[in-house]
Length: 435
Ligand code: XMP
Image 1 (tube, rainbow, N blue to C red):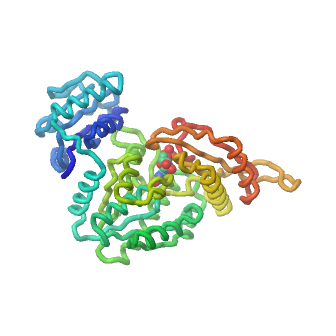
Image 2: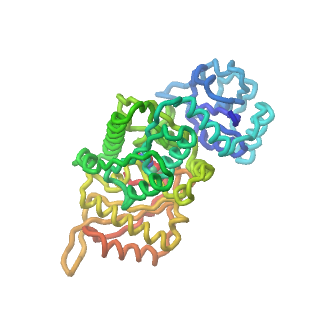
Image 3: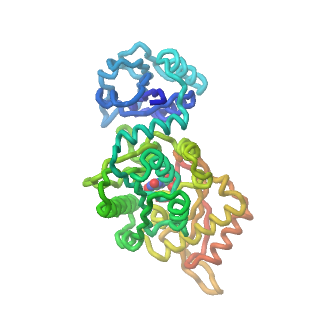
């Protein structure tokens, strides 16, 4: 293994991720693990140099105080505890200092003086370690990957191609909720340019049928997730020897779907909707990465910049942007208005500046005038946000002339639409997606 690692134990503190990132900023790889990680699990993690027990006031589950396993102190690693009364270690701190600079100093002292860790965290080493871990996990077996063409699945594909070559079978499912021309682009890039082992499945009608009359967002996500897995199982059934399913799960997905100590905000289909009878074991090489680190990994793997810096697209696709029960009419309105937004953003260079931008069509109508007559049609909502890691977000302040041009085009070119709105809400209180 190339890189040293610091483990952070999660006792429900709000700053687990900030501490993990601060450790990585000091050049040492860090992972967050559950407070009650077993000695067995701990001993399987490679190159541990030290453990940080990150206590705090939220160390409660159902009103009962939680603690780390006592064996953690006896595992032979240096341990530092912060704001954890019952800690049994030499490095015991009442709390973290106030400023980021001071926190950095505390971490530096622990990581480099106490733990003697090397600052060897970089993407080259991360990739080499993951290649080794994946090879060990997979052996000679085949791995199936849902290749949506988004950053995460593309980076997983590139990483796995490096690790196991043709043992990776990429499946691109067109669930009918893709952006305009998106599936065509995936085929073009992966099949034609990257020569991946790619299977294309058009399952549009099947997904739309399953989603008929379903309006609850969580229900929609679960149906899409479950249907995805079923399509993969069918594809796997046609192939010989598939035992693993690769996923582009990244750290924010895990946090927002609820760790043991964090409440559920939203279930993301790639971690929330897996059916109980799942036959595959999971391969998730990006599990501990933040979004910006995934991009750096993609660049290091030699993926084209346009692909690596491409804006994210949620697994359930336009399905969570066509609000409520999906209708073909409104789905087309989302797809067409989204395409106009993409086009205009590309013309003005906003595509390189804004992190995520899309349109949403709600399931209610408003009154308007079209061709001198009363119209009763759908609104389109534009959303454009900036963020580092999708955990918080601010809106892009788009120039009025650009917004007006986009509005004009949507009103002229998209059927069944008579109104365009701009969403001004940051995250929090809003989430990035509307559902
Ligand atoms: P939210 O709406 O939770 O979105 O603020 C944060 C980021 O995650 C994307 N997103 C999803 N990605 N499956 C995904 O793979 C999902 O169900 C899902 N929901 C939201 C969203 O587009 C944003 O980038």
